[in-house]
Amino acid sequence: MEDLPFQIAETAHALRKSFDRRASALGVTRAQWKVLLRLTRMPGLRQVELADMLDVEPITLSRIVDRLEEAGHVERTPDPADRRVWRLQVTERAKPLVARLRGIGHELVEEAFDGIEPSELERVSAILARVRENVSVIQRGRKAAEA
Image 1 (spheres, rainbow, N blue to C red):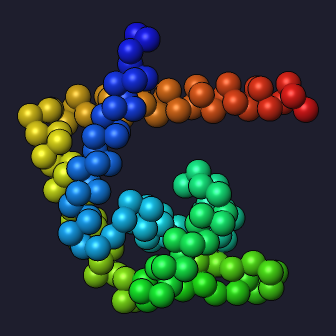
Image 2 (image 1 turned 180 degrees about the vertical axis):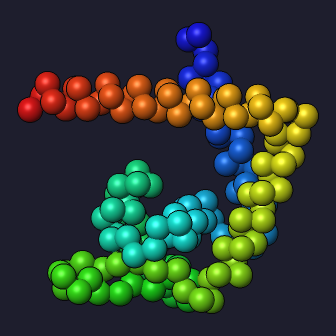
């Protein structure tokens, strides 16, 4: 059982590395594709929210967004409620790139999970969701105890 978290991390690492190799052919770094895919799922995030979700420092995200903005893939729009805040959007120009990234992801998933029954994958997914929930409960309990 002690080995399981390591195996999960190693599996995630292998999937990310494989995706990186495929995405690099499109001229996109891991940091960039993570930003593009997250913003596609959750348009209009504030930079600080996105930095937190991606577990990077805000200044690091700012540099990534700068490069994506220069390439015409992301735009910053002012927040109507707070002029100090920027909201992030994927541009129309980036949508074909995002579609290709999604295609790479779909292809990778098909190859990585080849030979595994859908029912097995559903069970693994449910188990991992339970683990995340358990960890979340633990974290909330610790934060409450620290307060």
